[in-house]
Image (cartoon, rainbow, N blue to C red):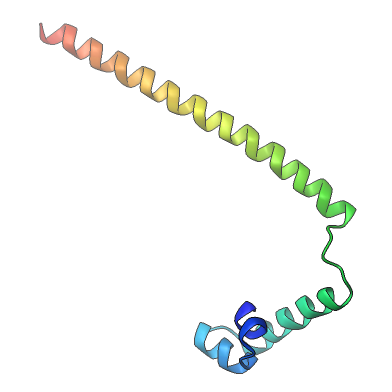
Length: 88
């Protein structure tokens, strides 16, 4: 879509180059330009609520990932210590 808008290239040319349907790209460009013309760059209330929910979820997932990483390091160290004790 940005290739059409920023470069002024034809929708058909860009769609062919990307290997996507010309009509689909045309709808995307028209939709984007319609939102820009309407000054609808701001998020709607629903979009803001979803963004807040996704940010919370992302934060929780990052904490879960950090915990699992620490746990895996702990258990790897425990397994290594156990193997050293068995070999002596």
